[in-house]
Image 1 (cartoon, rainbow, N blue to C red):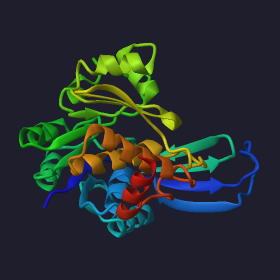
Image 2: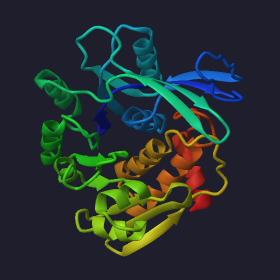
Image 3: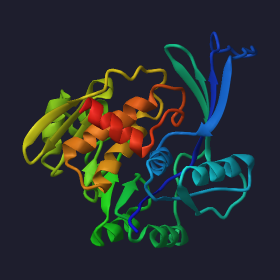
Length: 301
């Protein structure tokens, strides 16, 4: 049975919402609401896909600590099957405390950022991912597995995220493997060196048969065999917290790829899942079932 997979570090978010201000050193401020949930990144995209009814699998690092146990439970409850690559001690996750104010957010985080796989981890990831229809990529040490999967027909989807040194040269090894690259406007302009998202999209079309450039709350640019087009976002979604919006967009987009839909429809579905995600605090608080997604697609597009 076809499935979607990926390898990446697990992120935990401790969300403090409703505080009047961020405390200075030596001060204590109480907030109105608190929540703990899995954070953004590749795991969030896979969880959103699991909620849409697609079989999903993740290779990640989990320990014996309370945060890892929470993450295991969350993966399983949301239809994601985790394979543990970790053999050490301690807490192998990224943990972020986020203070969410009406117009800003502050973070303090613990962790190493990304997984650095050894040969055993690469083998375990490949054994899990073999046969996947789609594999979500991350920058890091998993390229040998991505190459095998690509040769076997798996669709590779890359979202690099922001990097002050984002460039074609730095990311050449993953960009040349990816079938789809999904930057936002800032990332697209940075990696291409162009001045506008439109020019960046045209520059990306020299490297990718189909191009996606997310325009934040405005919508998304696409380029396919019929030329460039723009898909407007859904105005009815009101933003509370934009954390995880890109991950949620990618889930809707990959849901479309999984179903064999056109690039335009994949972007439309991504706009809906991404738009829904910003309507509550946290990366995974607001989401859609498959039936809700398809109903909203009929309504808005």
